[in-house]
Amino acid sequence: MRIALIIRGIVCTLLGLACSACFFFKKGDNGDEPARRANDCAAFNPSYEWRALDDRNLAFWVPDEPLPYHAQLSRSTPELLTTSQLAFIDGDRDGRLCGAGLDAVIEGSSAARVSIDALAKLNKKGVARVQKEFRMTLKRAPRKKKPTEPSREIAQ
Image (cartoon, rainbow, N blue to C red; front, side, top):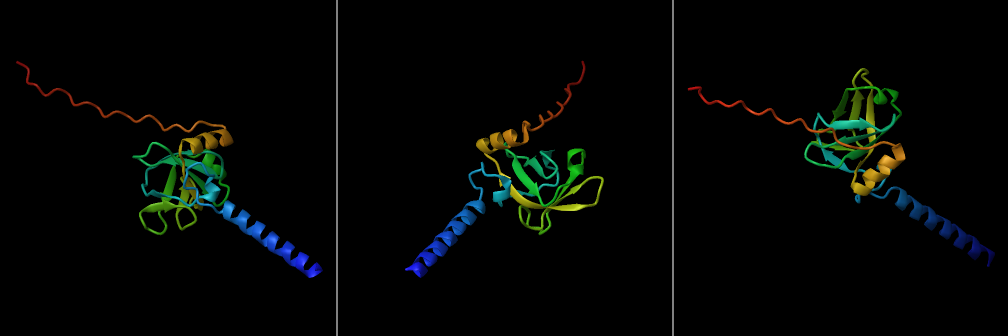
């Protein structure tokens, strides 16, 4: 009788651990999951618009998409908050920037490579969550309008 209770307790504990692990490593496909739980990918573009959220998190926009991605870096990088230059590295050369891979970020003034631990594509609820968590607004910089061509009419 006592052994049966011990076995039931162990089984329940293992099931509880398995369920919590499934919840923590759940793919963030609905866009409002934190980046640490997601492993989404973005089409690689060396010139993303980006904004540092803190010394370990950043948001960036892919050129043809209105909502940002949230990237969590593998370690704290204090220079991220003050730099104006950031390079995105497609480490595995698959044409995508992904979390938990060889893809990385290099801050402009240092040559220190920081890998991307997790990447989440955000929806509107995810943007609101990130804005609340990091106490800032995530707005894309206004696009510059192309200059208009001058009239080519010949003066008479």
